[in-house]
Image (tube, rainbow, N blue to C red; front, side):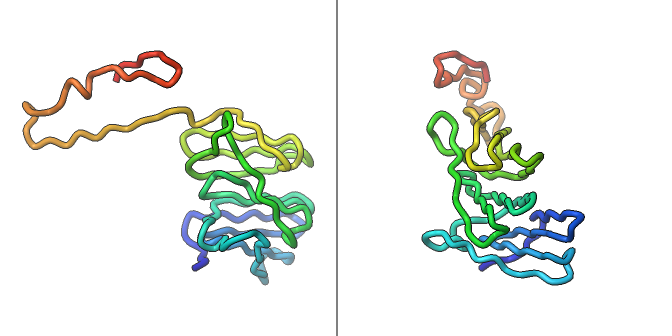
Length: 171
């Protein structure tokens, strides 16, 4: 179910236009500086309320960009939220993983988005397409819980890993 949960974003402009996001494709719009709010319906296939958790929204004029989890697409409207298009994000042909945490429309054409694992995306056409400035790359984590330090797997913890490009990295 859609909800405004803590940590979600809102965006407001001096002209009184404002947007608010939340989980379950929760998206509200105000035209009077937040005195009243209208719920936005996403005209997308499937059940967006079960697929999308919005973390961020930005708007400039009639252009609205909303994103969150999953980071595989940024939603874009060019008619103040009446209709929406899912714009895919990808790095080297693979979808961006994790979440998009913040999005900003900087000028009439330029927009930036930042996400999980250091991902940075840039648009030079008001969000119609996105280019990867920095991708998440390959990261790994290792947790070794032991009750006896003499039995810890130090060979795993102090070994070398082979990265996809063939280089070795010490752990």
